[in-house]
Length: 108
Image (cartoon, rainbow, N blue to C red):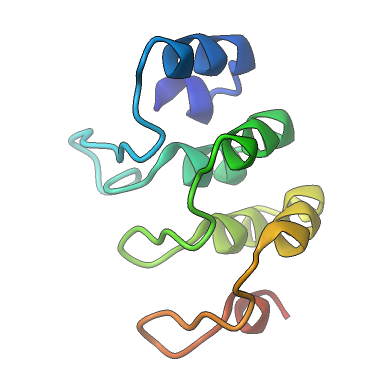
C-alpha cells in the first residue's frame, strides 16, 4: 500500500510479482486511509503510472472505501489526467454507489 501511495512503481511491480494481493486494503490505524486499496491511494496522490499498472493487472475500478472510489478521490485532488484515464477504463460507467450516484455524477 505504501508503494502505491508514494508512487513507487518499481516496488509495486516487484511486490505484485512476489505475490502481494492487488485486492489488499489498508489496515493502518488511521481514518484517512482506512479501507483504501492501492488504486485509491495512487489516484489520491496523482500517481498515474501506478494507476495504469494496477488497472492493467486487474485492480477493481469500482472498489469503494467507506465513501470514495479511485475516480472520486482523483477528482477531489484535481488529478484530471487520472480522472480522464479512469473514465476510459471504467466498463460499468452506470454503476451506482450506496448513495445512488455514478462516478460520472460525482465528478461532473
